[in-house]
Length: 519
Image 1 (tube, rainbow, N blue to C red):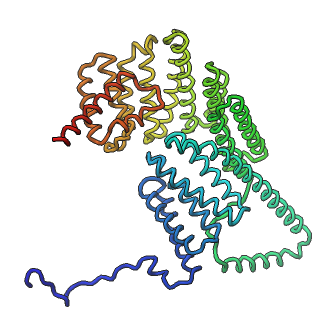
Image 2 (cartoon, rainbow, N blue to C red; image 1 turned 45 degrees about the vertical axis):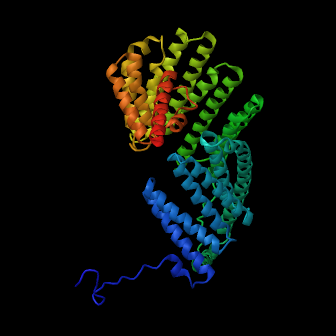
Image 3 (cartoon, rainbow, N blue to C red; image 1 turned 135 degrees about the vertical axis):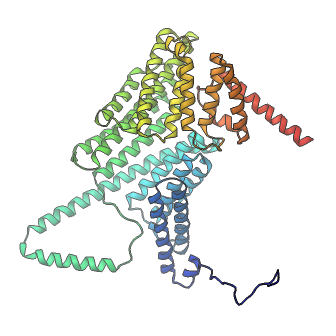
């Protein structure tokens, strides 16, 4: 056969695989809707199997596309919009963890829209209200931490709306639980009314089940309302109140809202006391209440320092005691270990700041207290890392702690252990550095910082060259002044000399690029 020709008779022809649109093109709207929903559910279940990571995210994205197509066909089904919003909320969680905060905020805004649409079509379902409250809260928290100024302005109104939405959720759940309890009581009375009706009742139930099986199966799997549903709502509401209280400009208003949040948690504890300790949900609910109480005390202590310039030891110790109670029951509880480490770090940070502000330096007593608190935090994070070795956030925390302890100049333990603390920091940051090609990898910056510190604080000249090389490597991956500013803002971890050193490198790189472009 000559080049450039082909044998049509022998050519293999493969039929193109029909798309979902091809398959559903001639179906009635209801059947089209069901096909897209079925596909969405399959994608969602596949995503759940993968749990986390890119594969899970891709399957959730396919589910979101199919839910959107379904709602484009039938736009008056509250379940369809509820599920669409729920998937968007899940995807936003992936984006927030992956530092794609703008996309997370965008998807949360869409999720909020879908939940509101679902409520517009049916305002009797507590699950929809609960998820709307969760989406509003996560949007506010993400905006406060990583959003633009315009997004941050939305945080307060969103948090206030979320609290009102959780109140409505609780109201609906109480009514539903009361109705379910009444039905159970009526059925109990009826069962004892006449033994002769037992076979008839069973036959009627079987007939009803058979009839219901033939009906169109709803998209949303409705979980029955229990005491734990009410507890979840109270805990979520208290958490949102704590976040809002931390943002209020009025200190009196903040203190009042912190107190209201603790009242909601007390209500949750009271409800839990009526449940059985053998329930599978009991321990989880008890721990969650304790975690939120500790967070509340710690947040109020930080807000109090801003208003009064005094470190409230009582509030911090209440937070630590609450976390210790959880760890007495489960010494490997990752969230309690990490929260305990965070509280101890915040406590130490304020003691250091207070001493420097009052005495223009770290006094002996304040240094001793800070060293002790940082050391306790170090133990908590190490215990957490032992039980969750792949958690980069924990390794970064350990790196940060070693750097903070190394900077307690004048504290004997810090001065004598400085080189080892900095080498420990190098090790922890390198453990956290997972994505070697991502310029936003905080572990990579931590390794550079701790290596620089070995040269500048301990006189290890070999480390100076290594820090330069690692800085150049990081910049080749795409790190620039903007990336550096994003990673170093809102923290007192980084030495001013190091910030100046890094900034000079970015400036020199920028000048070099400009010269190359002009030539």
